[in-house]
Amino acid sequence: MIRKLLSTVVVGILASASTQAADTELNLYTARHYQTDEALYANFTKATGIQINRIEGKEDALLERIKNEGANSPADVFITVDASRLAKADELGVFVPVKSTVLDERIPANLKSDTWYAFSTRARVIVYNKVDVDPKLVQNYEDLARPELKGKVCTRSGSHPYNLSLGAALIQHDGAEATEKWAKGVVDNFARTPKGGDTDQIRAVAAGECGVAIANSYYVARLINSDKPADQEVMKAVGVIWPNQGTWGTHVNVSGGGMLKHAPNKEAARKFLEYLASDEAQAYFANGNNEWPVVPSVQVTNAALDSLGDFRMDDLNVGTLSQTTAEAQKIFDRAGYR
Image (cartoon, rainbow, N blue to C red; front, top):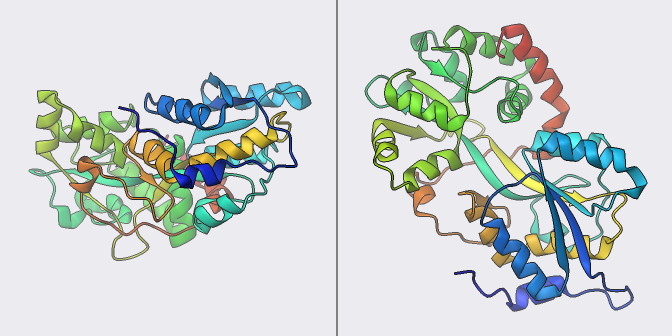
């Protein structure tokens, strides 16, 4: 059941400034396509009376639409996944800063930029075949380039934002030269040409086609939660590692969004973004896709994620990943990681 969303926290967050006229609708462009997000929209409308008009699509198509609409765009808020995609939107100049004490205080500094905010986090984990690979060999992302893993590594495309963001983080932690050496080592260790999504990598590891892969944590949690016998067998065959616990921590990425520059309903946009930072909304926003809330005080019970144990996340500011994403793409291209 959808929990009733009328706590004093939400009421306080959604209180509008008395000097401003109340908006009656919000136009949301979103690249998130999770069924549980429906509860977010319904509860926001119930608490505020603001009707949400939603347009869903791929990130690039939505950004192109916003760009083409220009000053006439009806869009108030844009939401997507991955810091590199949020940064791309920022580079296009579509976002505008939001004046909000609520957002300033509740969203940690490393999970926001000057113009957009993260509302949930996901981690990039290492998945290995329990029979074929000694977990001691794959405790860090850097280990994926080890000669012992020749012919054992599988990943999705190196041009995918998830891998580019990881590459961008590696550049900032290890340097460009070391990251290029790493990328070449990973390519040398490929069991197959990169293809498919993260779930495909996990299945390939379980089947023995690969010995090790990298995947976002929520894909692992989905398989753990699955009641399908085939998925249960997959998870019996693989182990999961939180990488780099002895160094800079496991790489995390985000879902997030911001107010658009030409938003016609700026007050509604602010309310909606503040609502996403509320305790109840954080639980829906994160748990709906097996992620974690960004507000430190919010606790989410997720048996699948809990079964993987605690980990130390990289505290690198996700807003800075865009500074090295283009360089990561060039490095991957030179290494043949496509």
